[in-house]
Length: 232
Image (cartoon, rainbow, N blue to C red; front, side, top):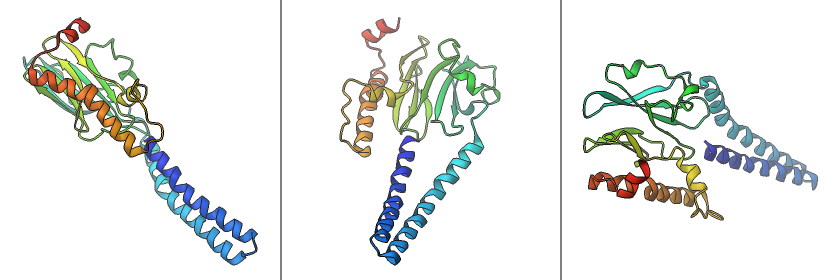
C-alpha cells in the first residue's frame, strides 16, 4: 500500500512539472506554447488521478471487515482439532492473517471472529496461535501446511513465516511484522538504495531470519536445543 501511494505521488510530479514549465513559457511571452504545455500537463494530471481515485473510492466503499474471513483449514494429526487460516483484507489496511486452533466439533467456516477483537485476544486466547501481517510484499498464496505430522507452517510469498510445534503446543519461530523487524534490525543499511534493492534486501532478511531456520528444523525433524530452552 505504501509503495503504491509513493508511486502515485511520483506520477503526479510529472504533470505538475509540465504545468510549471507551461506557466514559465507563458510568463516569458510564449503564450501559445505556454498555454498548450500547461493544458497538456493538466490533462495528464487528471488522467493519472482517475485510477487512484477509483481505487480509493472502491476501498472506502468496502470498508473494514466486521469478521475475519475464512481461508483454509487443516485437521491436526491426532484428529482432535482444526488449524484454521483466517484473513482480513478490509479497507485500505495491509492484509493480516490469523492461524487458530479450534476443536474438531466446531465448523471453522461458520465461526464469527470480530476483526476488532482478533489482535486483542492474541496471547490471551489460546486458540489464536499465530498472527502475521504484511506492510510490504510477500502477500501471494498465503496458506498453512503440516510437515512431518508435527510442524504447522504459515507460508506466504513463497517463504516460511511461522512455525508451530504441534506436539509441544507452542510457536517456535514467527514475526508478526517482518517488514517492521527488517527496517529496525541492526544490519539494516538502506540509505541511497532504490525500492527494488530494498525489496531484495527484505527477501534476503526473511529468508535468513524466518524461512531458512524453519526449513532446517523441518528437514532435520529436530528442534535445536537452544530453541527448546528459550521456549520453555
